[in-house]
Amino acid sequence: DLYSRRPKHSFKGTPLEITLPFDLSRGQHVIVEVTYETSPSATALQWLTPEQTAGKKHPYLFSQCQAHHCRSMIPCQDTPSIKHTYYAQVSVPKDLVAVMSAVRDGQEVDPQDSGRIIYRFRQTVPMPSYLIAIVAGALESREIGPRTRVWSEKEFVDKAAFEFSETEAMLKTAEELAGPYVWGQYDVLVLPPSFPYGGMENPCLTFATPTVLVIAHEISHSWTGNLVTNKTWEHFWLNEGHTVYLERMIGRCLESEQFRQFKAIGGWKDLQDSVNTFGANNPLTNLVPSLQDVSPDDAFSSVPYEKGFALLYYLEEQLGGPEVFMGFVKSYIQRFAYSSVTTEEWKNYLFAYFKDKVDILNKVDWNAWMFTPGMPPVKPQYDTTMADACNALSQKWLQAKDQDLNSFKRSDVKTLSSHQVIEFLSLLLQEDPLPLTHVKKMQEIYDLNAYMNAEIRFRWLRLCVRSRWEEAVPLALKMATDQGRMKFTRPLFREVFNFEKFRDEALRVFLAHRAGMHPVTSGLVSKDLKVDVSNAASQ
Image (cartoon, rainbow, N blue to C red; front, side, top):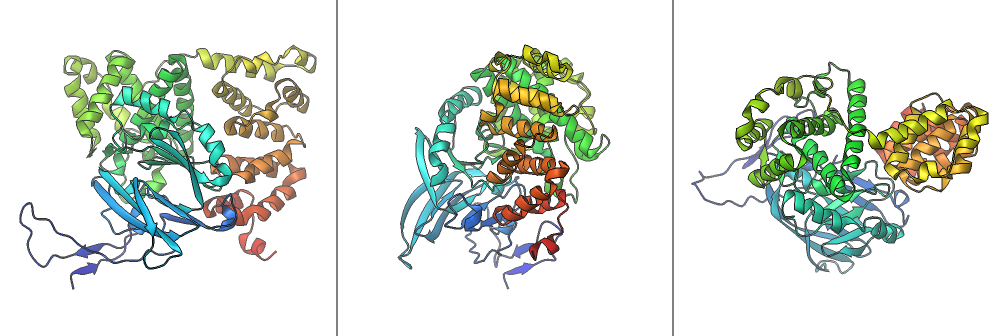
């Protein structure tokens, strides 16, 4: 036989070895054809029932291959060290539409079955296997720019077209910073509300949830991650640290330097949270962790994002400021475009690019930054101008007596950006619950119930429930079930569950909506609410 299967690995699956019946000579091409079927339980694929979609009529399929699940969907060398192009034909029932992380290449009625349509796709830019993506569902699209369409179920498509209308401006800004966009099309697919994550940077087709408004991060991945890729998952910070750096540079261009500094302060807090969760001595908090026999899924956290950003920002400060350092990032992208890199190669290029500043680079404690757990050895001094306003307002509320409540004005929040309002509410959530009188007064003056921004609404409703405002409970449960992003759904359910009087209501609403939730989400919420799944199923 030409192929054999080796013993199964705990998280890498079963190796398939193909033996060629002859020796290859240099430059010779071989076509190997593999006929295979995926399993319904393939870890890369999520099969949504009609109830889990917005339209409730048709089933829906989407894939999520990062970090190493592509192997469950197609036989491939599933490592980011190898890049390939691909061509695909997908046959779906004629009520559905298929899209992939590639340029659309026409469609036709399936010659074998007139009730089906075949969609064709072509990806001509070499990319790692984790970026292969497929979606099939009752999709519609709207054009929102010269190279951008937004795709979603018809219930969301017009809202999505409005919310992502700034995509072309962001793409242009990113091109000015990082060089030409090489992927041709930049489409955005808004997944059904039950999608448990924020977004995924699949080439030509970024995945987003209905709650994500800013896609500067996913756009940035078109250069850092998709064009220049980490060679193995140990070097994931090369993807994410550079992407956060580029995303914040886009923010600097479109908003201000103070805005970039404000986002960096928030990122440092997220890093501190991750380090606290893992423990300051946990080797998974290294910028470059050892993942020998560790599944990359288990190592996932904000460390590669924010420790990576902090290192790049620290280097920027040492080497001459944002323009100078962005020059390096752009040059690094052009140098390693279409390939996969390690931290060592990145560092060697940094030293070569700044050859006249090697004395500065030699003073950096590389071992502490790269291979030591916990917080970085240096905390950059970020500009706190935008954060100070949030701190001052939150302190004023925390210290206010009942007789002080009339000193607050609508203009307190009207002068803040939405990012600052989010930070103001986050600061209040870190303290003891506010008295109910205060929260009611806050609603009366600021009308926070009217805010539709998911990040603001999420924090505001948590604050209300925590202060035992009963009228907020149905609003919190509605937000927890209208969308399924775990970042929002889990804490909202937990807050209501912790409000003794409404504990049973939280359980009732969860059980009523469980069938429509993504299995990962419903499993974790079951744990949060201490639901005995075997018992609940029979009720």
